[in-house]
Image 1 (cartoon, one colour):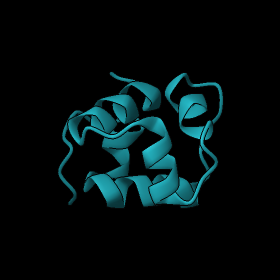
Image 2 (cartoon, rainbow, N blue to C red; image 1 turned 30 degrees about the vertical axis):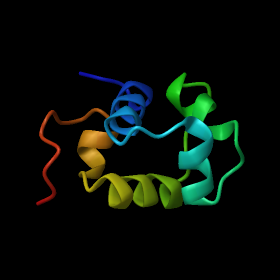
Image 3 (cartoon, rainbow, N blue to C red; image 1 turned 90 degrees about the vertical axis):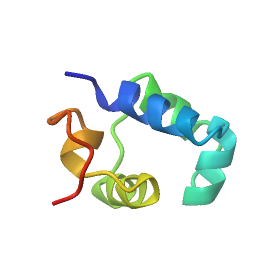
Length: 72
């Protein structure tokens, strides 16, 4: 299964967003998305929830525990 970083990069690219743009949308520093996408840092639960909401996917999908992006 995919890692959080791989999923985040894939989702960001489907919306044609730069890392800095996604960080701004979430109210984060400009380099933090790079850290998440390279699996150098783990986002807090608050950030995970914000990412799942923004991309309209389940937390399980986002963190690589499921290949089904649908929220149940």
